[in-house]
Image (cartoon, rainbow, N blue to C red):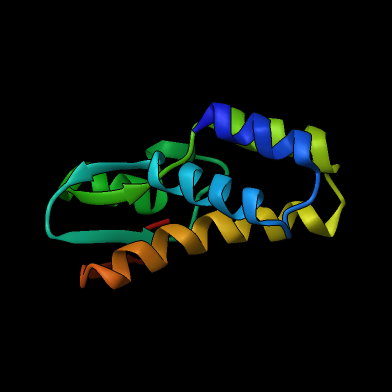
Length: 114
């Protein structure tokens, strides 16, 4: 996932076919766990991986999308913190992960835990 993020950062354009492939690669390699359900929910900035949907996943299992923290750092440096393309690329990565698991017929568990 980190290598794909670095390649995506070098491209600087998320609207070409290579970028789409890299987005999918980041998404696929950022899913952890096992089980028949996929845990989603709000990220807790204060508690990080100790809170929110990640805490729910840790307590009850399943699959979860959690990218390596350096992915955000790499992309933020490439696109700029206030650049709308940064938010777009982050959403595209999250969406790719969700779409893959929707296609597989996974059950989604939306955690209200913060």
